Image (tube, rainbow, N blue to C red):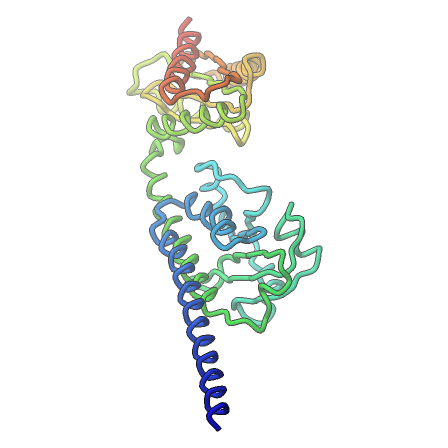
Length: 338
């Protein structure tokens, strides 16, 4: 009898310990999710939110990959991505003009779904990922319905299965939706402050930020960065129409990756990533011919220069990068005046 009671007590202690271990594991999981969600809620920029969802989420949750699809009927998100130079992560960030594709992901109603996925779906949603065993689909909602879909991939076939509880992922989807909406709105306001109100292109502050970003990119990739300067030789008070025509002509001739801005009252600048001096001079010649055909009221002086980041044993310092930017702009402007 005593042995029976002792065995029963031991069994009860084991059950209690298992329950305590499970509670402890659940608390750790909650804390893990909460830590990531706090970072999302504190994100101020759209690019930072995208980085969190596509890069940091993979490390934080030990995922094989993650991807994001956003509905962009009016093209505003595409403009934001271009203005902020957000990397599409080899097509893991995708935009859709039509919202019908959501019905294929969520055939009944937009709710978190856990399931195994076929090779074709894995290739479309997680390009470049060697193996996807299972995936979680998180709908992103606003007051009008679904506006996006966030996807997590695991190489483990049993990690995301329909039998598992989705409460934590439901809450994460809500936080991700809120963060994306807030950061997009915040970024739009910030970008508006960096726009020239007359020409609807970047202003001097925007150009300074873009110059630093492109110099840094050239430094990392050991590539070229060219700058073209267009200077209107007239009083600043009567050249808005001329500048507007110049901007229209530039937009028709430069590439999508090129960056156009007004840096003072009479001067426009164009940054051309990955462009050496010969290529930049060819672009300058084509634009000069195009501008001549406009028969503008004012004379426009143009100059171009290109800088290349050299491979060195030590990384180029921030001060050296600033000096390179000053030299790039000054030389291009001097060639315009010269």
